[in-house]
Each structure stands twice: as structure tokens, then as C-alpha cells.
Image (cartoon, rainbow over all chains, first blue to last red; front, side, top):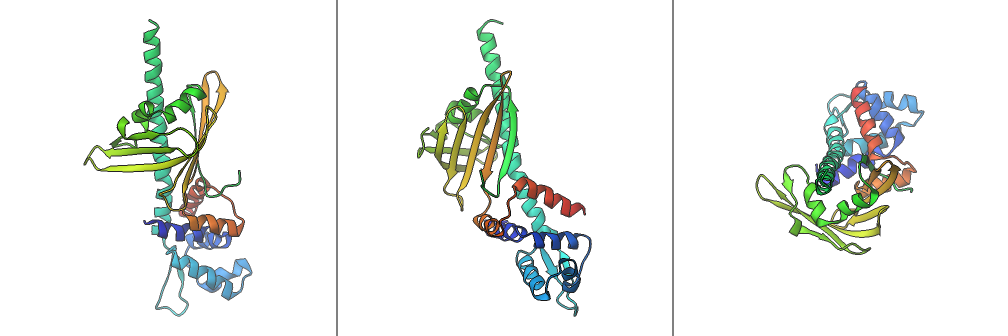
Length: 115
Length: 148
């Protein structure tokens, strides 16, 4: 995933309402009307959020059906999650090797002192 | 600190803050552990000009194909043995890495690596929403969404 796409995903996720919409969609597809209900929001406001989510490709909407139900699209979520995991992994491994290096230094010092 | 969009990584090592700080800032040490896995970081490819504004660069060479990748950063803060900060200007939005070394007694040191490396758009979106979180929490959140 290129940085730009990642920016779109993180930017879309930065809004609490949009995160709540995604959480709702994780339980199953829903129409814009159904999504608007728990938030006491206008249809227009929901529609704006859905556009952002769709643009970040976090959701997909059926083109054919009249109600155009929204579905969670997990590909980008997976990519964002693995991007985070990858950064953590690099640091984890780096510090693992640092531990080994420190142990080697201790070993050298101890042998040096004839222990 | 009020930075947003952070990744925090905490580890405890059996060494003094001074030694850990030196490991992070000496080519002869760095070459032994910098990594990442599957690469080597030759000592002559490491530049450490240990002062604010000085260069920190490492060239990682792939074990598999010999391809290399150079990470080029600029030190922002050099406070031995407590704190080390560098910024990678090449990365869009300026990836900032802050490492703090805290003596927790009995020869042990807690090393906290704090990285603000999220894309700029995310940072500004967060600022607009007045919403602060960390990548770690996003990680949890993403995991939660997927298991709901």
C-alpha cells in the first residue's frame, strides 16, 4: 500500500463517527438509513461520512440495488494493521539483537576479568 | 508530550543507560544489531555525527540480493544517557524517532522508542478532530473491528 492510500485510511479512521460506522458494518451490511439511526444524524451527514469511507476503500456499496447497502471492505484495514505490525516487528527484532549483543559484551568483560 | 499518531515500543534491557545510549550511537555497536532481519548494516555504511543537526545514516544491505537501502536522518536531541531524538527528512511528513533511556535499578534500563511516523494527512485529521490516540491503540481497534 502506498503512503497516499495509507493516509486516506488513517484520515478516515481519525473520526469517531466513522469508526462507529465501521464497527456497525463489521456486524453486517447496512443501508445508509440504518446507519443513520443510532447516531441521530441527518441523512446528509451520514452520506458525507460514507463517501469518505468509500474513498478510502474501507467500505463498498452495491451499485445495483436501490437501497445501496454498505459493506465493510477489510483489505485496506488489513493493510493498515500490517503496516503498524511491520513497524513494531522491526523494533522488536532490533532490540532482540541488541540483547544478544549486550550478552556478548558481558561475556567478553567477564572472560577479560578471568571469571 | 502532545504528539499524535504515535507508535510506542517499550523494552527493558540488562544494561546501564550509558551503555544502551552508546550502543544506539556508535557504528561498531549499531552494526551488530541494527538489522532488520535478512540484512546486514556494514560498519563503514554507518554515519553518526552525534550532535543536534548532525547526520545519522545507516545503509542496510540485503543478504539475499545485495540490494541496499539507506536510512538518512538528522539528530534533533542528543542527551547522553537519557534521550536521543532524530528525524528522517526523506520520509513524507518527517518520521521522528525519540528514544528515552530510564534507569530502573539493579542494572536494568527501560528503553522507550517513540515513533511518529504516520502519514501527514492522518496527523492533521487527528488534530482537526481533537482526537488523540496511538498507532498501538489503532492496532487494538483494528483487531477489535475484525473480531466483532
